[in-house]
Image (cartoon, rainbow, N blue to C red; front, side, top):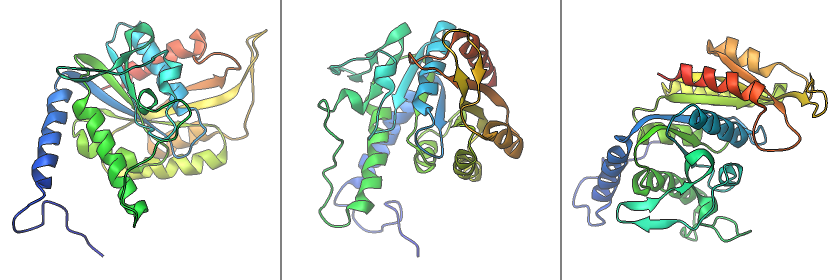
Amino acid sequence: MSFRSYKDVSGEDRSGLLGQVVAQRSRVAERLRAIRRVVAVMSGKGGVGKSYVTAALARGAAAAGRRVGVLDADLKSPTCAGMLGARGPVRIGEDGAEPVIGVAGIRLFSTDLLLDEGKPLTWREPESERFIWRGVLETGALREFLSDVSWGQLDLLIIDLPPGGDRLADLAALVPGLAGAIAVTIPSEESRRSVERSLQAARDAKIPLLGIIENMSGYRCEVCGRSGPLFEGNAGDELARAFGVPLMGRVPFVPRGAVAPDGVAGPLVKTFLEALP
């Protein structure tokens, strides 16, 4: 079964949809001219600490002197704002919505800043066929965050994607110059299988794969500093070998705090920054 897009419809476009989409994509391109690199952080499943890794990379890059922004594109379960100490309200300036400033001067935008406390994200979709419209609305929200947020001059914009590979393909269509994607996994076989599918989807879409980060690779003792196993498996190494990309690092589970220990985060961030094209 095939469908026509707005580009394929002949006759008069009375809705003006084509003009709206073209104009918004032009605004996205204009915003991105001020951003040197856009990198996506992805996973195949939830619960692997993808946002935790995003926050650690953003903090480390900012500490290394980079001008960093974070877009939390996990619209339904946003957590980056809390991890980076970013609080609303969102202000609307002459050039669009202004990102909120978090720790180390990191600029952040997230639905967490727009939703009432404890309220879930809801869409104003048509009553019928909601499951079809929801994907369209989520992609539209991502496009608006890229086009209507006044990011300013950035060395690096890190986009924390929701689990799965769908939004990565949407992002690549919106950001043709996407520097690449980093995949986050935990050591387990279940995570390896899930992340493998997302990595293959990224490769099929010709999205550069920068590397793998294995999170919760062990349990780090707060007293002695030693790490022990937390999950069975070796997903990070196996995925890196299968896709011919580097294993950027292993991050142990930390009982307290939202940032990996300096001894882990420092080398990880250095490897991450060196991998950027």
